[in-house]
Image (cartoon, rainbow, N blue to C red; front, side, top):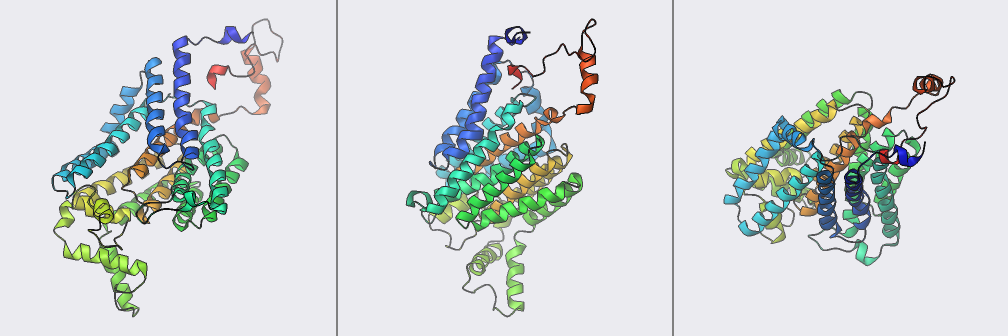
Length: 435
């Protein structure tokens, strides 16, 4: 049978597939690679990739998108996310930096909504070819980061006090995206390639002594290993741990100061950076306790630190930022959202659950340890990771392969009425449209 007779897709369907694949290439391959050489590439590639995906869905007349959106927004996690966005918007009323905060809020919400629509309108089943896009992009980005990190050109490793270097952003991008990439390779049973990709990503982090990135990768690897045996139980434990850390965050500097006094270091006024940071956090928790309920307003911590209104040793941890900006109400909403996301990760098929949970742990580790999570590039990167995880989850149906012993039975089942035993009238390879 010729290839032409087996190709039944209409021109509109072909155009939709091309547009969607172009969008995924922008997000999964171009983004991690271009980020090694350009700090602003992420702001262009993410909206372009999302728009191409939506255009492909529109041309292909995808009907599942609205239902996916309704289901997502009406779920407990979706409702909590909407409330958190509402509370952050309401806090603009009392934020001290209204103009900048409004701009950042609109950018954050707009990008996230665009990615949510793109994720909802992705094809219901991921093509096998698309599963290999992100591993290819992460591998190329890791190799380039490793080489540049070793040779250390100034444009790559240099940066200002209030901004991350290109190397740091590249490493963070790799640490966030490597987990859905590893999940895709394991889903296709390419365990050797998965191990090689993990070693390459770790080598890139080691090349620049990126301690936070290495800690995040280690936490993700440990989570992946534990979740392989019992994803549901691991998800419940991680949900409680993450939610507890968020809710009890203001008590952390107070407990740290108590421990320092007990061991004879005279409280949190020492010269060590972590000691000074905890002192600033403790002063904020005790000296401005009325603000613990409402917070100082969206983007107050980030803008106050960059303009010099907050001390140099002000924590950059996501735990501090959430409480400082959004207060108790925002922290409770964020804790519930994190709890629900981990529980959802434990309910997805075990083939991909460990990779999803490892990615969540790596992201939270980066945020809790002080990555500039209030910046737009970080939010945009997390949105890209959402697309990557959705692609991974929708690719599960492609992993079932028939055993070689059953080949004859399958051939006999597919044979025509006058065909000899063992003859298969169906093509041995899937058509190009299935890629």
